[in-house]
Image (tube, rainbow, N blue to C red; front, side, top):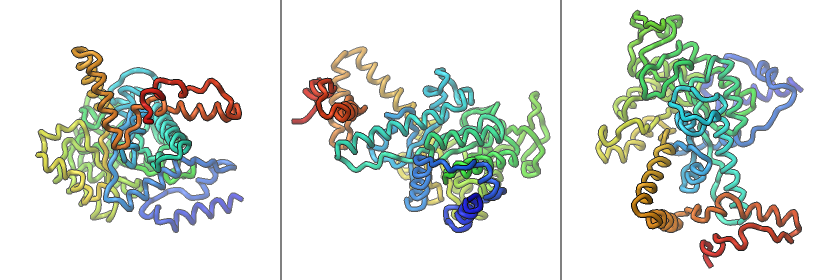
Length: 426
């Protein structure tokens, strides 16, 4: 039996175009030994990864917004986005299991992002159940989720376990950055400390091994912070020597020459082990994006790239309106096939609530009524959350109650509700 499993896995690696250009320094036999005696199916993770990979091969590019909650993800899919991004920054700020508000410094419990992945998938599943029950609409609710594993929350074994947890929660893609986990910072903060290149590569190998053990083609994105980071933990790796200055800090870290050349060096090292390469940048710079893409593609033709269209950039200060409007199309031509606004959920949530609260402070219910009328106005575009009871599944559980009682339940919720009276079209 094990021989059949080993042969099947090896054939997949050898013959499936999905694995072209991917290096694994371990054998199919070693993977099967680590799987255990049965193969457990992770449907959402597997199907999502297959879907996202297909999008990346067939679409000009896939663009996503950072979602903070399940409901935000539902609205993104309803509006027509094909993928969802889940940022560790947003989880740190307002969705982690400690219940605290944190900056993006890996201070929250390591299983927080997988927990939000699960919440998002469950919200999408509820939306799918409602659509299926009502037999109206044809939205594919199970959009692939690309989740932030930060720097792995430790060493290669921590990466292995975190990747498994992501897959169990239904993540389709996961990204890992090359910072020291204990000193991890948002890519747009100072004080970032790089791991030696060889250590970052081992983390990518660990993530791939975890996906293979779980039996999913999870998309792995390797992020480098080397464009801005000017510290490194060790000088052990010859690949890093040309960038190390010789200066040391009080913590014992080595100073490096940050910049695009250091980022390119690392991107080239990561390319055999990752499906996409992401260079974290400090500004939306087309020339820099082109330089990085050209350097990667010179040695790895066709390698897929990812780009953070970050809210940490002041877009209007850096670019004119026309360049902003065409920015994503331009970098897509360079090979940046997955593009995302990391903190879109945070900014949408905060600004919309601030504006509502400011209006409500001064004008009371007139301000809220305007929000409600805006919701009605969006229904022509497919918005449905105006009917909030239906949106969260009240009708679905009415159907559950009726099924249990053979259609005789007298306690169903929507019948006799204000929503049925005031919000349902005749």
